[in-house]
Image 1 (cartoon, rainbow, N blue to C red):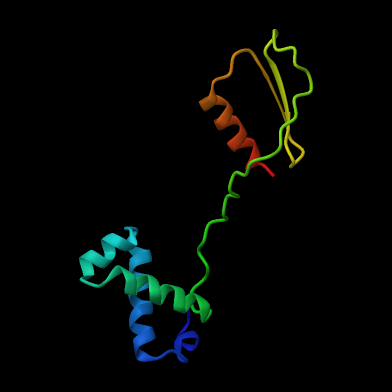
Image 2 (cartoon, rainbow, N blue to C red):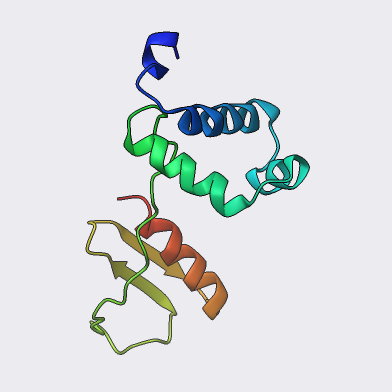
Amino acid sequence: MTQLDTQHLTDKQRYWLKHIQACQASGISIKDYAEQQGIQIKSLYYWKKTLVKKGVLPRSRKPRIPAVTFQRAQVMDKNTADSQWKIHLPNGIQVGLTGTVNEAELSLVLKTVTRLS
């Protein structure tokens, strides 16, 4: 960031900008930085959010992973003797499973494939 970019900031905004930049450069968590500097973590988060809104700091959010939602299921074939599963997800992905599947394994597979869309 150049000097011109920060000219429109108040002294207080520059103060917090320096702290946020120092925190980012330190490589430690915001919590640890705040504790080391003796400042409130809430203040650091507030000013980071404020300076992002002003366009002084870039947005650093990671893309959100969509929440897993419940979908209506329909049993196509009641013959479960061969233990074959075929699941069609709304995002177009199809999952096929053979054999015994426990709840944890099925949950992991479904969470993983819903994130692929």
